Image (cartoon, rainbow, N blue to C red; front, side, top):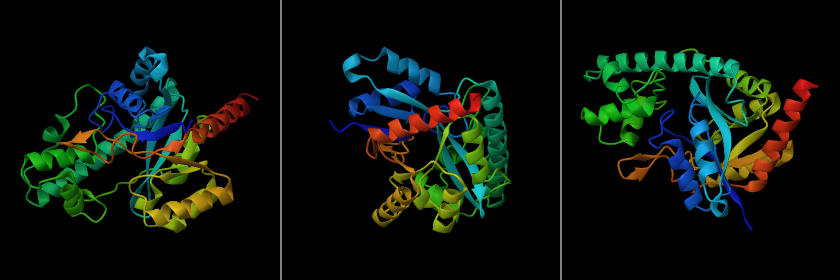
Length: 289
């Protein structure tokens, strides 16, 4: 049996549009053996996803991998590092993630100010009304939604191409932790550090630097990795003994279309989960040794 896992999905805990239990249901419907909840700089969606998986029928049971996607910056652009089997109930780990979210908030303020300078009547209050609760984990997709509502753009893609992407008119990147620091944060917490969507960065020298620094794995199968890139990252993973992971980067729906891709459309073999679990187990044992 060819068991598969989608190891990169987002929920409403960050910038996805689905509740965590919906991600679990979609994973079941896709026939997956496992799904990772990897929200940006938060683990708030994991408990509900685990409860949903426990409620599922045994014949369609889906394993939920507790994860996070840590935001960092290198050479002027966002670099994301996925962490798997992180201590999602540990308050010290929560506190570290809280600091990353505060940096995200500062970035949102700078982007909104830049958009206002460009003549767009956007406000921070208008963006933040899209999330309820004290932990408002707001990101660029929420700003994009507000731009659509204001008539400044017609789609999420246009919002990123014109304003919010790394070549956009309103793109800003305040000081953040480096990807090396993100890797260290994840590994010191007992998790497993995997570089997310390396094909997006257009900087394979950086990818090689991070491999040497201590990555545990590379996200080979991702909707934004082209075929040649997948082949390259697969070869580097094999040469360096790294785990090869894959995921859809599912963020729910923007209109009628799934964003980035439909959950289950990009996956890794289940043995990637087993390798990740073993690395995390050894790391935790070493920390208590």
